[in-house]
Amino acid sequence: MIMERTFFEERQRFRQWWIYLVMAGSMAAWVYAFSVSVAAAESEKAAPDIILLFTGVIPLLLIMLFATTGLETRISSDGLHYRFRPFHLREKHIDRKEIISWEVRKYRPIAEYGGWGIRSGGKKYGKAFNVSGNMGLQLYLANGKKLLIGTRMPAEAEKAMKKMMDAKV
Image (cartoon, rainbow, N blue to C red; front, side, top):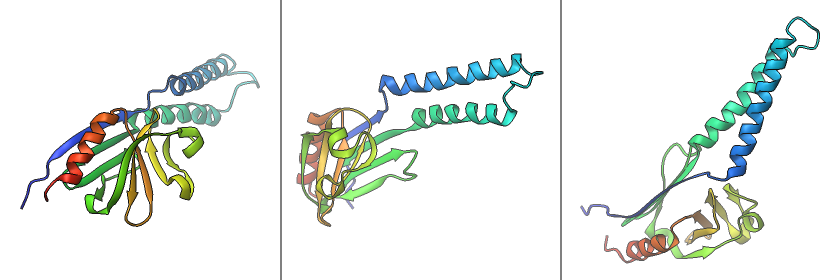
């Protein structure tokens, strides 16, 4: 039995400033609504407790979601492994024999996939997993599907893919 060798590993997180601005704004709105409600507790203008609870919980859940969301990619001698936390409970694996061809390419996240995250670009572009940037590892699979995995380290990913495709397993 041959041991699996890892050629490349990358962990990415959402780092767009505007995401954190929206979250901070929603938390500020909740703090304001809460303080106004507490100040007006005896009047008819006070917000019901259930509304305050939901308006506070939703921003907190969004913050927790973005804090834990990330893309993990690993290229090894047996194939490509990826996981989009927290949506994939387990790492996904694409055997190198399933990869017909591949390329590291610059792509247009909004035009091709409608943005970042777990995205679909239809039959033309296939599925994408990305968190930022515009560089990705495009895979063309034996089943006819296309998959793009975003990367912040395109040169290293390309080097690892060459090693993986040439590996003797």
